[in-house]
Length: 148
Image 1: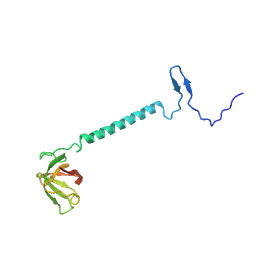
Image 2: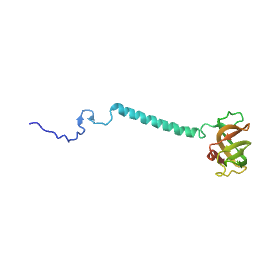
Image 3: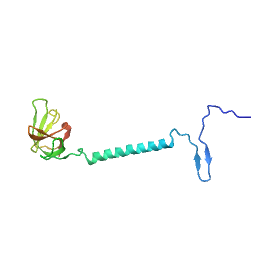
């Protein structure tokens, strides 16, 4: 007499006993190449995350080089020095800070930070020439840090 199996039965892993090990028959959603590709993608994402975090710690200023008068316009530089003077432009509320004789232009920075003459600061920005004179242009007030 033939046995009738219900179409609703769920197949379960079967144990096959070998003398040396137990193997399982497995119904997987991913094939072996798909699992390998998923593992490779996870490893690449982890590697990129480690490189990103390492870059942030190794180059905290984004690779800025020390400021010098002969740097080309557009070069990313940093400057540490003493604030000699600050002034706000008459149009736009921009801040111009003189740090150790170098003008630093801070767009719309006039109301956000109070820098006093004598403060020791670190500025990160790009070199630009304005009215024939080199200056550093920052992205905003967050590019100026007061150091101790």
